Amino acid sequence: MALETELLALERRFWSGDADFYRRHLDERCLTAFADLAGVIDREALAGTVGSGGRWRDLDVDVKGCLQPRDGVALLTYEAHARLPTGEPYAALVTSGYVRRGREWKLAFHQQTPLADGGQPAERPPEDARRAQPRPSSDYEVEGREPEGIGTKLGIDEPPSKHGPPGS
Image 1 (cartoon, one colour):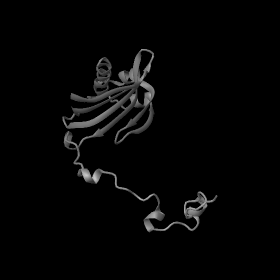
Image 2 (spheres, one colour):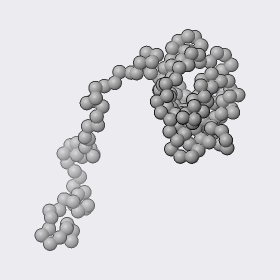
Image 3 (cartoon, one colour):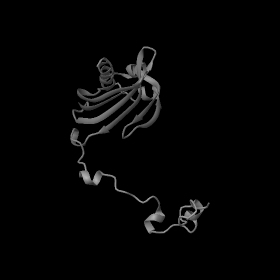
Image 4 (cartoon, one colour):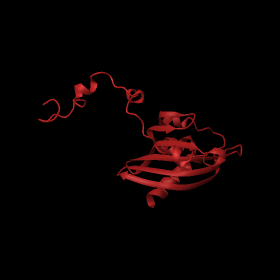
């Protein structure tokens, strides 16, 4: 629980902090996944995206999970609800990945998936539609044909021999 509390405190500050906070708590490079900003971005460039105006307000966080798969690496996933400086509501599922540098956690990964209607998850297809359907292994299987000789070269088209496996 101590790890979750520590990372959550950092997350809250990323929502409200200034560019200097970003510079102090971002790793040298950070992989981000936002609708309008995705990729590996260096610390200074990411800190530069933080304006000097109003930041998020009324932040509410519901932690979904915290995991430390190995020493020096930690992941935190949560649902966030906040208001833009304009007052417009915003909600997202968020995952952040941290690496330990010395005695401090540094943000190395951050992803936000906005939720529809300011907090309601987008409507999901019915359970049966989400299940993976068996798919053919190749276009040839779709058409019911295989290139001439491929199976034979692999030894899988020959009928079993009375004296041993194919090709013996």
